[in-house]
Image: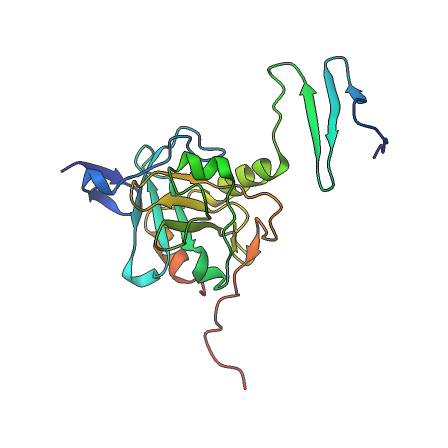
Amino acid sequence: MLVIRRRAGESVVIGDDVEILVTEIGPTRVKLCISAPREVPIMRKEVKLTREENVAAARELPAGRLVEVASKLRV
Amino acid sequence: MPTFSSRHFGTLEYQPDVVFEFPAGLPGFEQERRFLAIEHPASRPIVFLQSLVRPELCFITLPVLAVQADYQLAISAEDIKELELDENRQPAVGTDVLCLAIISVAEGKPATANLLAPLVVNLKTRRGLQAIQEDSPYSHQHPLLAAKPEAACS
């Protein structure tokens, strides 16, 4: 993994088309400005994790098995 | 009354005003905007969220308070606005909003609940979204307790 230190106003370039500019550094978070081609998906990691969890949760089950699986969960 | 033919629950007849509307869909399911909440006597307090688009798509969910009794909802100002809730405070779970965690069940692993990104539905308007919380102490894979053993060990 590459680790780079940057100040506000400085940026990092990834490949030919992606630039990440640090615009603001607050006490607990930084503000980033990202320029990338339209086809490059950019999302917060929580969104990616949620998407993956949703897809995993939607795993198809044969008819009738869903209630059976659900009723075995201990709550 | 409209009907929908679902894989797991057969033909469902429902009042149009009970449908949950998710205008943005869910991450990974952006086209799924209408769901029906179904409870089954065998599996309470589980709430099944049946898509009204795809007969086979049905999420298993649990009220967040059933997963964690002291759950604190902290949704963003944007999400509060989107749900047309009081912008001066967090919504109260159970009275202002229904708050459901999607459950993931995989063979051989404990089931998990996504407490990081619960589904939040305004109980007045039935409009909902998946609220991905920021700076949250909760996990997207919160383990549910293992199933109760069939026989007691001594």
